[in-house]
Length: 281
Image 1: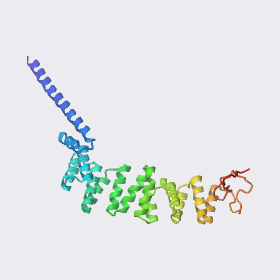
Image 2: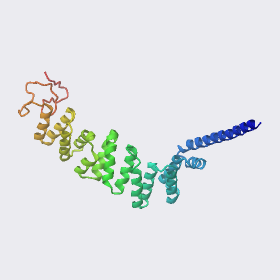
Image 3: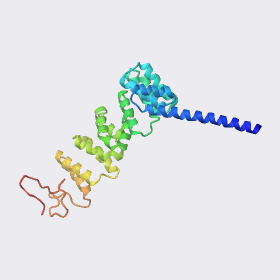
Image 4: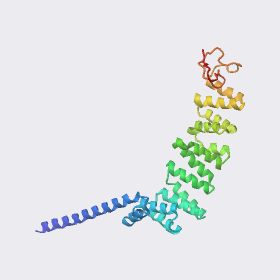
């Protein structure tokens, strides 16, 4: 009899625990579902259902921040509430940093930004946001260091990284040193050619040479550019690198068509005209 009562008691406890676990799972699931909404009412409902849902609390804080609904203190409290559930949420620290900049609290903004910086590791999206905040705070070194990682990880953002670097830092040496990694050098050289910053191309080319050099396509593009700018001496040095062991000092290169014409640099070029067919024979 005692064994049966003990068994019934254990079964009852397990049943209660199972029901509680199921209820918790439902609550958590509903809260998580609402947390992805951009509707403030649903986000508020998500937080009411499960205050431990740090993502929902952050999204609500961010929405109020961007739409400027509610006062600053309420938004700040929401950011901190999300951090109380997950102190490692870099996005919440970034949100606080931006909130403090907007309200003129630069010292607090710097503190929040440093907290975020230590948690975002190598996330290009978060590093991009961090760099924009760092620029607003006047910390160009941190901003450029972050953009360096962004340019490495996301080729689509490289032009924007270079544009921002030149607009903010303005010093070619600083940009090259802090924002341009070896991996990104060819893309940066192409950018400088496209934006016609001739003086800035020389140290980039020198650093490329120290790291194994550029491929022939990049070298040809640079030689063409230098010829167009009148620096034939440097262009000829580059040409010699494309054809090592050959005498490139002759006034006419490839005079006997020893090589297949590339139509660039110091090689033969054929101009195209309407109604005229021209080609190499």
